[in-house]
Image 1 (cartoon, rainbow, N blue to C red):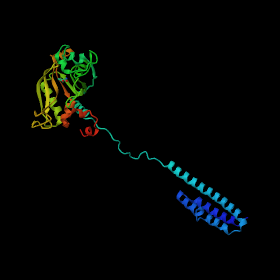
Image 2: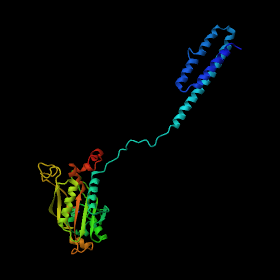
Image 3: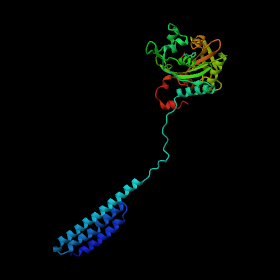
Image 4: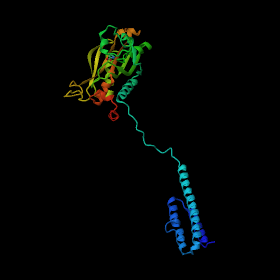
Amino acid sequence: MSALQPQLDEIARRLRDAADAVNDSAELEELRVRFLGRSGEVTLVRRGIGALPPAERPDAGKLINDAVAQMEMVLDAASARIARGALDEELQRRIDVTFPAPDAALGSIHPVRRIIEEIAETFERLGFATVLGAEVEPSYYTFDALNIPADHPAREGFDSFFITPELLLRPHTSPMQIRTMQQHRPPVAILAPGRCYRRDAVDARHLFQFHQVEGLLVAEGINFGHLKGALAHLSRTLFGPDQRVRFRPSFFPFTEPSAEVDTTCPKCKGSGASCSMCGGSGWIEIGGAGMVHPNVLREVGYDPAEVSGWAFGVGVERIALARYEIDDIRRLIESEPDFLRQLQ
Ligand code: PHE
């Protein structure tokens, strides 16, 4: 047996001990260099071959090659052990599901929705119930029952989208007056918010789909003063405590007397001084109102001699334009989250 064998065995033993103790791949690489690298221990032994008698050289070369092959297996095994350890560690790492996550980006309440909720809340505090109705109505509820017979010119003004000769997209929320009164005996006090539709060309002040809030109070002894009080209260809740309301004589077939309702222009505070919001009048129109027409009360089986009532219908987008001082109604329906989010 060659004299090299014990020397190689001794190197292999030290390598095995060292490899068992190694814990990461950088240390393992150091070991590979120390034993098998260019000036590693085994390489030094190999260089000694030249000093041997020529006859012994081939055997010596083979011994060294075998030893190197074994040592490489030891190093590979250690490498595999380290990789497995890293994977185990990864698998055992616990995820803390209670760790606070960053806040999700939430949307904001649309200004139209916000105003509807404020109006509903204001009247709910006064004892009114909020009711919702369908957006498609028979012309009976939209017109006939509201004292607008088939040949009445007032129908023209409602610019309706008809679905069939008898069915239409409601052009106002007033059908809910009829539906409510037909289902309940007086007193009734309701608020009916919702979408309405009219054949209007879209521009800075008009949309073909918009929102109204209808109010209706019918009981014994209700008069115009109650209506004024309710709308003044509503204006102040929406715009601020100094708000005033103005009633201009008008005409609706379902109310008598009827009025257009104005509120102080929030931009110029009513002064009108070169105000682009109110066109210099100092007032902003927010809707129509009046005392419920006796024909309407009779239509639903109420006795006008016993009960009276008021009704109003306000335009929610109109209120939003004034309150947020927006000059173009279309901005409310264009999806601009950053713009809408700032309107509180
Ligand atoms: N419905 C009317 C409109 O849309 C408004 C209104 C409601 C008027 C209730 C009087 C009473 O123009």
